[in-house]
Length: 225
Image (cartoon, rainbow, N blue to C red; front, side, top):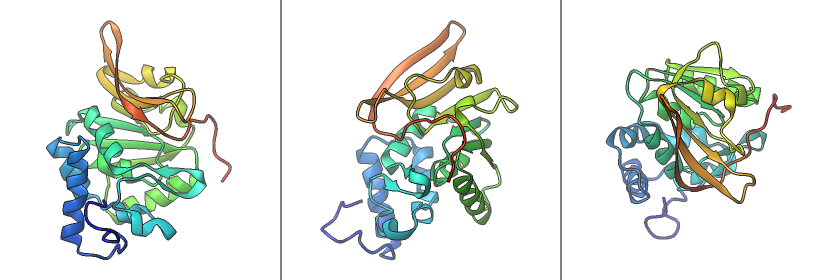
């Protein structure tokens, strides 16, 4: 996480204990303080989800490119989004935007069941294979247009969206349980986005703005790659 001198994170096969310590220190310093979230992020090795040229940078706090023109979010943002969901061990979570599978793996450490959806079949297939290797048996991976959610599995205790929409999608709001929480980036451009927390109440929906972020856009339809 570049907490030490230059070049210390260049070797992905460096001292694992020291690397993990720097990784967790960087998370805490950026506001990830929930003990359960930190434990989950300690257990899930981000290096398994970053391939190719960027593998050596897997433990730095930065987003990295993955296949299909998508990105794996920076660890501190993953941690802050997960923390904002306040997941309990009995919750069922919907993730829109599987990407590399890293965020779903974190969620699987905290929730009873995770459904993760992506519009790119290549990404869902690669993530599903990695989940099998890691024995993360409480994740269901689906290729679909995530902007419509998963009506057949709704309602959900928690919903996490890892792509930015102009407004929270109506179908996802409708699939949130009473008392449920959704965390997602919203914004009309990739330059101006805010991470928001939506809580469903008996009166409707409460919105809380958390921090500025930058995510790829939420796109309807299936991907062509």
